[in-house]
Length: 149
Image 1 (spheres, rainbow, N blue to C red):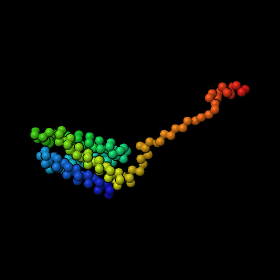
Image 2: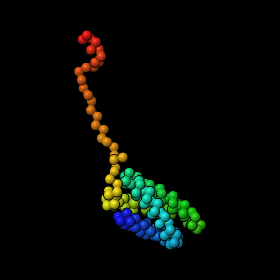
Image 3: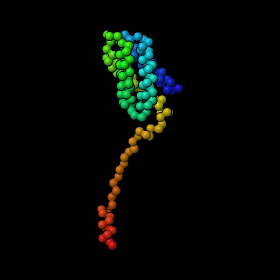
Image 4: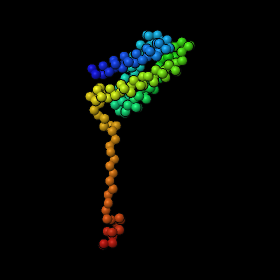
């Protein structure tokens, strides 16, 4: 149930962001904005939020979200945009705004959603390397043994 609430809140906020940026600024139709929101939310939630975030940190997951969002938005806007719209500019602005939201959303996920499902973080934790030197009186033990006999 927690994943459903998290996914719904992510989709709602992404829809609001993309509606303001793509529909109001770049005149992309609402149905196209709704379609790209659902597609983008599904892909980024399962790839970045459920797979990358538990195994790495917030910064890595935000960078992955930015890359995924930029590529998907750019490809989508290349296919549906008119000649007056710059798909690269629209996708960069949209991906940046989504990444800022994702930074805060990942904190929410880490605190309230993911700890129940991802208790096995031992595969990524690095053990502390506590080396200690060993001291002895014998520098060359074979030579000392031969001299005594």
